[in-house]
Image 1 (cartoon, rainbow, N blue to C red):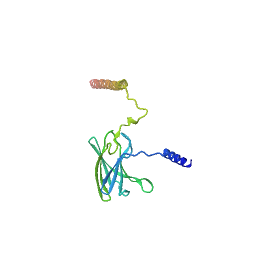
Image 2: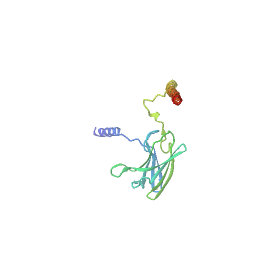
Image 3: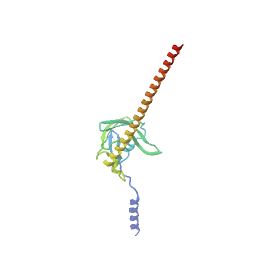
Image 4: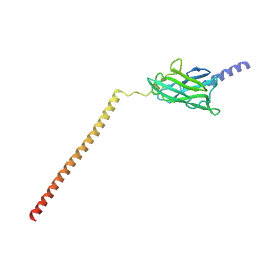
Length: 213
C-alpha cells in the first residue's frame, strides 16, 4: 500500500506541474560560440511587438559580457531590410536569463522572415543567415487566426452605405463652400457698385461747386 501511494503521489505531482512550451529556436555554432536563434515571442503575430532572440553561449556557458550592439540582426522580408542592434535582456544575478540578447522589431506582415546576424563575441567573428521555416524558427502568422470572437468583415452593402454617406457629406460641404463663395462675390459686387456711385456723386458735386463759384 505504501509503495502504491508513493507511485500515485509521483504521478499526481507530474500532472500538476506546468510544462513551459518550447520555443522554436535553432543552434548555430560559430567556433566555440553557439547562438540559439529564434523569435522572442511565439506564436509570432503580425502587428505585435517581437524580437530576434539570440541565446549566446561559449562552451555551454552563457556569455554575459556583450555590450549593446556587439551583435546586430538584419531583418529581411519581401525584399526590404532593416538592421537592429541586439541588447542584453538580463542583468546577471537580478533578472532575466544570462546570455539572452534581443533585437526588437514589430513584424508588420505574416510570412517568412530572414535574419542575418553579424558581430563579434569575445573575439569570435559572427556572421550567419537564417530563414524562418519548419527546421529553424517560426514564421509570422496572421493575428486573425487567433482572434476570438472573430471580427466580422464589412459586407458590400455596409461599404456601399458608408461610401454613400461620405459622398453626401462631401457634397454638402462643397455646396456650403460654394454658397459662401457666391455670397462673398455678390457682396463684393454690390460694394463696388456703391463705391462707384458714391464716387460719381462726389465728382458731380465738385463740378456744381465750381460752376456756381
